[in-house]
Image 1 (cartoon, rainbow, N blue to C red):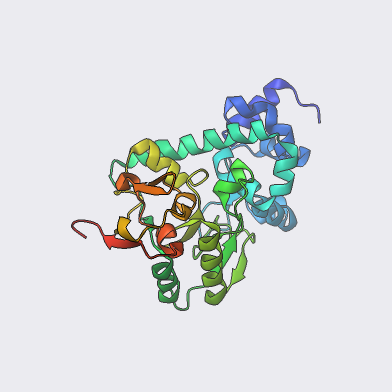
Image 2 (cartoon, helix red, strand yellow; image 1 turned 90 degrees about the vertical axis):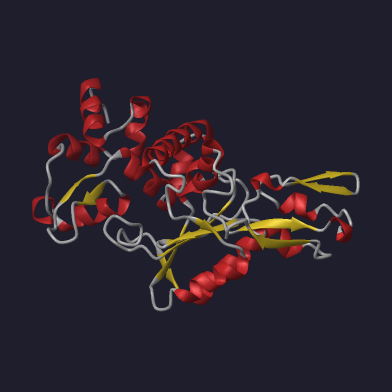
Amino acid sequence: MGYKKEELERFCTYFEVPKQFITYVERFFSEEEIDFGLKQGTEEFTEKDCGKDFVCQEYRKGFISKVDETSGKYKLNNFYGMLDVFAVSRKEEFDTKFSKEERVLMDEWYFNEYYEWLKSVGSEEPTADKVLPLEEMLEFIDAQKDRPVYLNNCDCKSLTGDCGLPVRTCITYKNGINTFVDRGLSEQIDAERAKEIIRETDKAGLMHTCNPNGICNCCDDCCYLFRGQKLLDSYAVWPITDYIVSFDESKCIGCGLCVKRCRMKVFDKDGRKITADTAHCAGCGLCVNTCPKKALKLVLRNGK
């Protein structure tokens, strides 16, 4: 490829690529895609205009999106809409084409876009995401009954890179247009497999959150919800939580397992003495599940 600067700038305008990532364009997109973008611009199109094979291929890759449910029309996606599709569905390619530093820059930009949206909602609870402990998350899955359930790689972890914790952890019930499911990128599973994933991720030390569209099993370092929580200072408010940990010091043997399990740094260990500051407790129950002396339990927060 050898595009003139003004051609790449025009493509980036159509695809809403941030200026700082213009130099990444020829690694993200094929020559066929750039040529198509330059020709098509912001105009809508159909399979008849471009060919079924091209449309199917580029919809799957996240390069284009459906305009609506029924018209059969498509349009160019944008950089924000494509970035997580690329990182999740082509993670090996993403990690190979872009250095760790470049991936961090894209993740920071992507998260900042999400964070600005959170602030624009103007609510203490900008989304319906709720922290649930293990047993209640298993009950949540059972309550979905006959809803089709799917599994994806976690987009938060896919963007930031491998943090060493499980990545194939995102459970979704959302299957409308422009979703991973509709693009053919999700693995359909059953409720028993979904519950198995919850148990596995709980054992690995990942917190569980859910909303009507699905379940996130993630860590505070990668998860956009908990990264947003830190900046919003919305502890105990959002993500929504019903519980807080209660610590019975008289039962504690000072093993320190809770210190290792807690993602929110509630516990501190000095020798064999454990102390707890529950101000940032998410009510996830990770510490409770593995306390050998049952010195920890979840209790309802005030007013719940």
